[in-house]
Amino acid sequence: MKIADIHLLVVEDHEFQREALVSMLVDLGARHVAEAADGRAALEVIGGSAQRIDIIISDLDMPGMDGMEFIRHVSESGMPVSMILSTVHDRALLASVGTMTEAYGITLLGTIEKPATPRKLEALIGLYRPPATLQPKPLSVSVSEADISEAFAARLFEPLFQPKVDVATGSVKGAEALARWYHPEQGIIGPYAFISALEANRRIDELTWIMLEKAAAACRDWRASGLDMTVSVNLSLGSLTKVGFADRVTALVRAQDLEPKHMVLEVTETTAMTDTARALENLARLRIKGFGLSIDDYGTGYSSMQQLSRIPFTELKIDQSFVMRAIEKDACRVILESSLDIAKKLGLKAVAEGVETRADWELLKGLGCDVAQGYFIARPMEAAKIAAWAAAWTERSSNLA
Ligand code: C2E
Ligand code: CA
Ligand code: CA
Image (cartoon, rainbow, N blue to C red):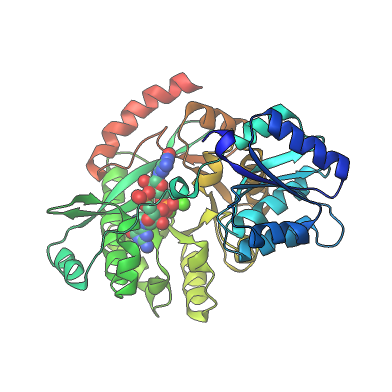
């Protein structure tokens, strides 16, 4: 989108700095620039005017309503705005305000250490995408109860497996099972389109058991062919609150001659967020039995820290949104780095997902991340293709060193 078409709002209490910012923006070609001297005035601009605002460039230290409170009000207004934050403060503060801003559902384009320069402003404004294109997850095809029953009856749910590899050595460590629906008319449907429908229809538990069963069988085959791999399975809340879940998974794994340590259960933060004692009981029991427990999509929930302190995780899986933007967005790299730091301090294995390019891979290597997963390494594939892929990867990864 051209800067001339973007509606900007500059929020800065310091008059000279505000004027300087506005004239830089105009010099860059901006044609719609509003300004406000503090948070309260800015909210009036947002709420009162008929014009839309696309990007707010805001100072964090302001008298009266500070930047943090302003961000909260902007979030509550429900406006789909993007923000650029400017401050004289250090990276630790930027990281936490950045996480907070994104947790409030606002797109953070980046942060600017004062003084702002035209180049820096231009680079961050260049990252702006109108809200419609910011929705990466395809909306669900409408799925009826009858469709779901048919799919289970015809056994149309199958896992694909995406490899996870050791960043330092390149060795293959495991693979994550990702559900697919092989629809006779619509082709292969991805989980974003049906997981919530299964949850709503209380059929998610059935999918979980199919995935656990097939994942264990695949892992047994890989191990039998000499690959020292684990298998990861995504869990939904519905399954974790069932009494006896831990015992049943243990029996399932043993039936394939596997040990619990060969299976990792991935729990998303929203799932883990539940207070229910039963989920915590199951998670603790799984851990005692030796299963791996992974906190999935780390960094996207509201209380990552709290989850870490009450669930005995063995692995921290940094959300792909931070990993794939770490190179272009300072805030994402800061969140990636601090997540790696937390994993190290808590003795958890750090896994980065969404590793799409060689540059992402090199960055993770430099930062000392343990394990990587993403399109750069491999796309999800059928279980039977893993062995041939692993042989080719061994060849390729020796050239990456
Ligand atoms: P997730 O657990 O975060 O899984 C990673 C998703 O990112 C997968 O999407 C994977 O195909 C995709 N991905 C992997 N590498 C890259 C990359 O380099 N770039 C990009 N852009 N994407 C990458 P998928 O298979 O569509 O799965 C979406 C989500 O559905 C999963 O996210 C997981 O939360 C959920 N899901 C998948 N299978 C199951 C399941 O059996 N049960 C439950 N409850 N949820 C599942
Ligand atoms: Ca996952
Ligand atoms: Ca994830």
